[in-house]
Amino acid sequence: SIYNSTQQHLNNTTSTTMAKKKVLLMGKAHSGKTSMRSIIFANYLARDTMRLSPTLDVEHHHVRFLGDLVLNLWDCGGQDAFYESYFERDRETIFRSVELLIYVFDIESDCPEKDFDHFAGVLEAMEENSPDARIFVLVHKMDLVAEEERELILEDRKRLIEESCLGVGVQHFQCFGTSIWDETLYKAWSEIVTNLIPNIGVLESHLSDFCRICDADEVVLFERATFLVISHAQAKRDNSDDGGVKGLITDDKEQQHHEEGNEDGADINGEAGWAENADELAAEKQGEMSTSPHSQLSSPIHDAGDDGMATPQTPASPGGGNATHTAAGSTAVVSNQVGGKASSNQITPSPTPQFDAHRFEKISNIVKQFKLSCGKAQSQFQGMDVRNSKFTAFIDAFTANTYIMVIVSSKTQVNGQEWGTGVHKAATLLNIQKARSHFEQFIPRS
Image (tube, rainbow, N blue to C red; front, side):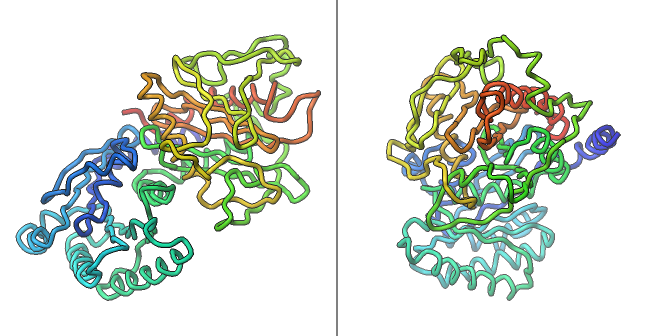
């Protein structure tokens, strides 16, 4: 079958592809390189990076990502004296066998000309020693730019970066505006690490199948430790379907239109053992009490509803929905706040079929902060449910190295039950449980 052939291909390639990947992190001193690395990989809060000291020379960090993928991260100090060493004495040592270069520009730099001279020198050294390396450029500290000027200033800086790249023959690169204080940092680093994941196309294909089988609007896969987005799938629905997540997280400045369609009659994958719809589960679940909405590690949080199924009973969240957060040994209802300050990134319904382009990264940011808070309370984050009149979002531990989010829109009632609750909720959670072992094939354990 296709699954057996895929597994054989993965077994043949894992030993060579899931190896150490050399990643260079470069940029001028005080540009924020170490701060972003600490937030993504060392679970720092943005406010905690103030105590970090400047990097001297080169710091080596081996960061494990998705279990077997090890990033050999070279955090290079940005003082002028170090650049002289990089370009002369240590040129081959620094720039040889690089898989990926991340170059960080400080948007508030007082000497941009020198910054671009260093950047051009790095590109030349990369072309000589690692011509096939992928290049990412981050224009950092964008939060220091007035909001109404950010887009214009970022575009101007991107133009200068493109000129520098073309000047040394670099044709392919990606550029992002970032800040440690919002979701842009997660957006950039999600794109970066996705480029290092082997067989990402196979993973995305199977995630699309899972989305279709669950009759979900969207399915998102997050890396377990960093909560970076590594893959997502979106259902295709026809225009007559008024379901769907209408702006999972809305943003007045940046919204993108996506087609929504509907595919009915999805086939059941016999090997994975997923339930295709709620009706198949009705007879099996009739009269039974649901345990936890998540895996066996979490404590049950339920109350019997009128339909005989267990439904979470929590206060209404600020976004207009009910949020059940599950951590092993603790339960909390969290207002949409990050770092003690009220966040504008509330999960709210929108009357139009528009999506915030950064919705996944905002969720990464919010959930990771809550996950860290659970750790400080000596509890292990397991998952959460968020529900309002427009959609239900299930976030749960998935494989050994990932979390999954399944978004199911609220549709017409079936046998008196809201879509995303009761039997349909049980079917969705069962599908997540049954799919775990299947997806372990594509995301090997450490």
